[in-house]
Image 1: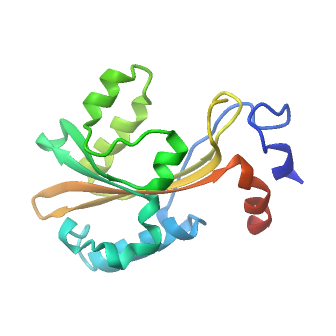
Image 2: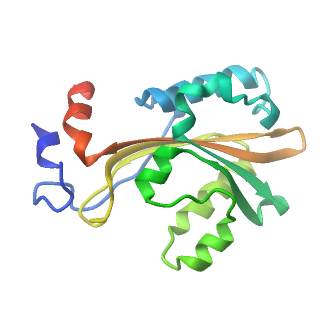
Length: 183
C-alpha cells in the first residue's frame, strides 16, 4: 500500500520533494476544511465574503483546533496571528498567537516566503484560496505528510480585514488510515 511506504519522511519510497497544488476550495477532502469552506460560503451569501463578526466559535466548534485567525494590519503591511488552533501548534511545534508575521520572519530567516505572498493574495483579491500537498523527504523535520488548507477572506465592503485559515494535517503516524479513507 502506498501510504505504508511514506510513513516516515526518510523512507526511500516517500516523495522526494514536497508538492503543493492550488485547487478549488470545494474539492478539498478533509472534513474540517470542507466544513469550514461550506460554512464560510453560507455566511457570505451573495457577498464576496462574510465579516469577522459573523464567525462564532460555537458554530465552528468542531474545527477550532484546525483554524488560524489572522488580522490584517495596515492594509496588508503586516498580519497578526489572533488565534492559532492546536493542530497548527502540534504540526509546527510553535504557537504564533499574538505575534505578527514580520516578527516571525525576523526571528526565523528561513520562514516560508510563500506565507506572506499567500496572505497578501487573499487580502488583495478577496477570493478564497485552497491548497493541498504532500510533504517530501526535502522536509525531514516535518511532523505531517499531507495537508489541505483553505485561506478564507473576512471583511466588509471596504476590504478584507481578517483571514480565516483552516488546515487539516495528516501526521506520519496516521498516513495509513488516511490512505484507506481516500481509497
